[in-house]
Amino acid sequence: MRNKVTKAIFPVAGLGTRFLPATKSVPKEIMTLVDRPLIQYAIDEARAAGIKEFIFVTSRGKGALEDYFDHSPQLENELRKKGKDDLLEILKSTNMDSGAIAYMRQHKALGLGHAVWCARRLIGNEPFAVILPDDVIAAEKPCLQQMVEAYEETGGNMVAAMEVPPEKASSYGVLDVQEDMGSMVSVKGMVEKPAPGTEPSNLAVIGRYILSPYVLKNLNKIKSGAGGEIQLTDAIAQEIGSDRGVYGYRFRGQRFDCGSKSGFLQATVAFGLSRDDLRDDLHGYLTGIMAAERAAQ
Ligand code: UTP
Image (cartoon, rainbow, N blue to C red; front, side, top):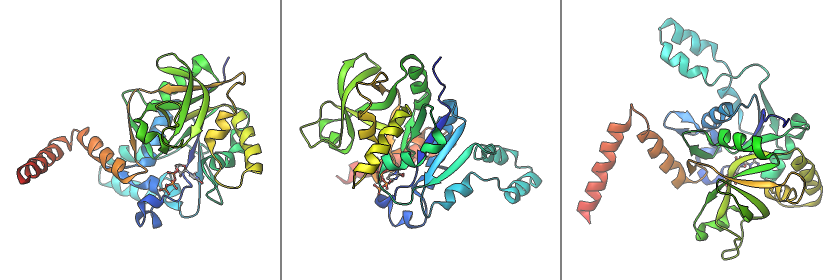
């Protein structure tokens, strides 16, 4: 029997420099798409995939994240007194069971690989998921749930993969594909941010992973060797050729890069248009400005 994936790491210790000055005092993961912070989308996706333990790798200035998942007795009492049951219900999704959430500090922003490595003692010897909250994925079946179901068949290591145009490949980790099986590919190599024109395929790695604990052992070695950023991609690539192997999973859904301003704005519009309470207003506004723009040309 394969071990179930019940733990997820949320690396949220990055500096978020692309959103300065906002991120000087507000963690990027607390920024909201419509009325829910990015981190809430990530947590909901993890819950849907059967995750029971949520491990945040944080850094200085991320206190708002811890507060967000705390109970807020005063606010809840006020809402109860006023009979605002609908709002109380909304707040429920932000409450975590006691002991289900853990915070680990990454003292220096040494890269995503290092952030994941910081959580190694909480993972132990089990497979685990990694979710990057700035990759928001709109999907009928949440992306991590799709991956967990596929992982139950394959085991090993699995990364979410998405086709990107060649000129964009140099911004991602890119897969070198051994065998293409449709929704899944087996991987014979991985290159982090390949120089333009050298990308081995158009399949880019997106911020969802299911990893074997051996990846943490690989990070151990990289950690003691490398000086600059410690890349998660390198530690996963070391699993290629092991009994476990590495797979890319072509998820069904639309991914928004909410770590970039343009991606964040696109996600805001898309999530706004998907809401019954906002669609008509927003749609009217957007068609109005598009028409005005066309008329001005
Ligand atoms: P990014 O590459 O988006 O970096 O990190 P960033 O610092 O968040 O944002 P910019 O580029 O300065 O605007 C991808 C993910 O890895 C985490 C980030 O929090 C984000 O979820 N990360 C990155 C860490 O936890 N620690 C690191 O040292 C680096």
